Image 1: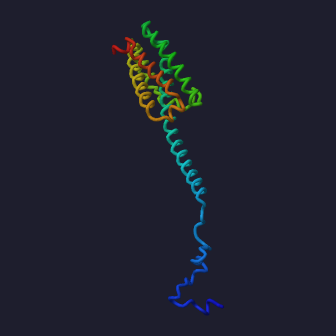
Image 2 (image 1 turned 60 degrees about the vertical axis):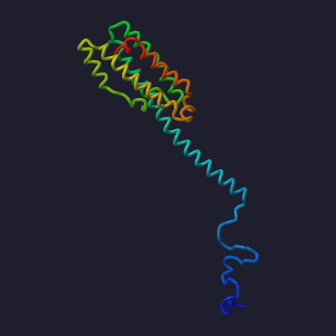
Length: 203
């Protein structure tokens, strides 16, 4: 029978569009969302969750890598200045302090670079390059005040370095997966040891 010529009477209880959406008797559908099995839904949900976790982890990891590079950059600049100052210091005790600091900064920079998988001459480590320090030390040298100016710079730099490490260690576990807490704690202790030197403590 032609359905176009024989419409379904009103009130008959039949859906005239059942041939599209399926009749209520057998529950078949022609269109609409697929009927996804329960196990597949769980698997898809787990996959979405995994993607979200990876995204958050990657974002957090990038942030902490930046903070670690920041610490390495401080090491890099302090090593540059202590190396520069090695030929201009006069007081033997200050010279000895500078030699100790240079040795510490060399070791710390190499360890940090190895942990981050970068070279010690990576361009990112030039973040704290400050040629004004060179100029100020040179002027101090001309005024026979090089050692004092150097010690002032060293104390300020070590204090900022120590604070940067203290702020990085407790951030979260991501940073510690890149550089274990041990080396960072050692770097912080080294800074404290240098700051405890009489030449700096008494400033």
